Length: 397
Image (tube, rainbow, N blue to C red; front, side, top):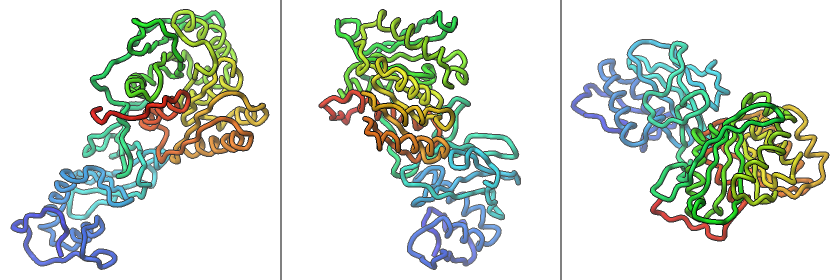
């Protein structure tokens, strides 16, 4: 029985059959396809590959997903060394070489993933790192775009897209402080209708502010959640570091500047509700660590904390929470199963939050250390901090 993908019977001569590993002849499998090509006469091998690739392109897309297995495919007429590196390999291509299907231009390698996994990856061809040429789906990161794999049950986040709905305004200022003597970029999101109202608003401060806007789609997320009445209108404060590794690693001068100068400046320039339960701080990786530090050190300022993939595997942050009395704050904490050191340290902090009775929400995603994950889950923390009764989503958007 020939594999069930479009093959022009006039292009194939000779007699061959496909035997799957389980000798089941009732459905096509990738393994059956590989066997059929290996068993085919030399003159037919490339025609089978070409037909298979056309079928995948018009049905499944690339990578080719079969149940819980994703097959990464690469076409090259020469004989390169091909490997894959991504969230699932620790971004190490060692030992991840593709198999060359003899007599054809196809190279392939399969991996098993959870059905709701979303992962970043790149190919490494003769030592050069490239995007998957067959996969149009990419995710931008701090080091440029990566190819994106979404398994069959992964739901793409609608809130990161831009729609024809009311949009908030972004203004930019250069904020100079006296604590550190530094000038940094601060961008302020004001919600639709802010200029025409006299209301005061909740506020959320984002570490890595520019990246939250450009890579994390935060403006689109805020517009979407506000429009659909999933959260109340909020002011977003997007703050850039001047020396990220220094300021986001237990830098008490940076924290002092933030608490005593930046927050009061925002409160004086914008109509914020200057109370801790109406103010949040959020960050990713080292920014998540810093958000957790700000919250435990200054709960009178930040009553809500969004800690995404937090780099709390170093320093004494976990011990600070273990030694602290339970504070009147909300903590959103998440991690991906494909970022092991961050997942393990976050799970350790979770034990303290659970056993001591902190108000917190914990989420685990089958994802890696990526803006693809963080932008998709910003809504999780915001709707936890400030939920509204109305939760219906208009299907038009």
